[in-house]
Length: 327
Image (cartoon, rainbow, N blue to C red; front, side):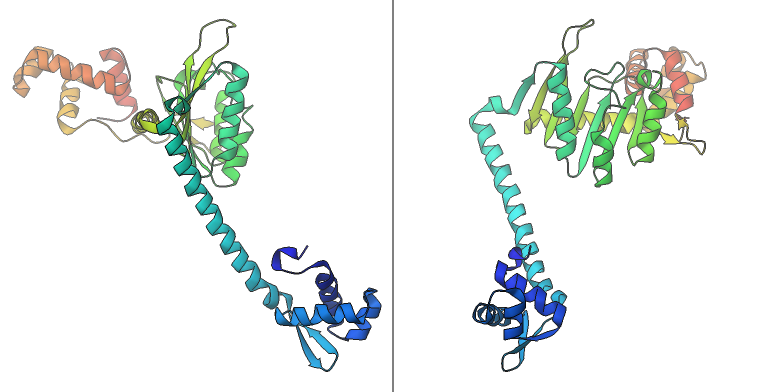
């Protein structure tokens, strides 16, 4: 067991006997170990050179405290392993980058069915070291939240989860309880009316994007994306949706709160003023006159605000603005 700190089997046995005895003669140790005085003597001299034992009188040795004798050696080896691990990560990253430049096909791998998608989703989370990002749409493709047993263990080892849930998914039976449990374990969750795609990203290096999900029993397909500008675009998409989404939390009774806190308002002061006029029932023509712009510009800006809110009609925009406390 002490080979990693430089002891062979004979030295380890001799050191253990010496520790239990505190001090002992070479002959005593040789007899008790069954190795003989000559072999034990060589082991003791080697251990003395390593700082594990000291000769207190001719032929008599005492053990040096293990934490003093072995602690520094273990620390040095741990530091060496840490340096080696970092070097391995750097070399692996350089290898992947060079391989991707030479073979663009390695950037995207198509996963042809539900089983492959589920396997890679679990593997991405098991291998994640820093952060997992996710879009969760209604009607799970590969597995439900309750089946995702990789997330609790990842959260336990310190991986940060930021997940955006589509509102329709939160209305499915049992889903709010599952999300509340995930939040209790440390997940940072938000909700939004609609999400554009189904997406998971691990450590900003590997993404899984569902490509085709036809209704019925046909198998879905997904793309496994390894770095590159496509993954950068997906990261930007996630961050933009995260800024617009509403934070979720768990109330004292354990239920999921859909209205606990609000996301930062994405509108500037000019659009907020226009929105306030719109919600007050001021016609477009009067808004245009008051703001000194054309009626077409008013309609264009209203369309932009509707898109930012993730709704479809002006009535939905008014409801969304009130719920999110934009005004």
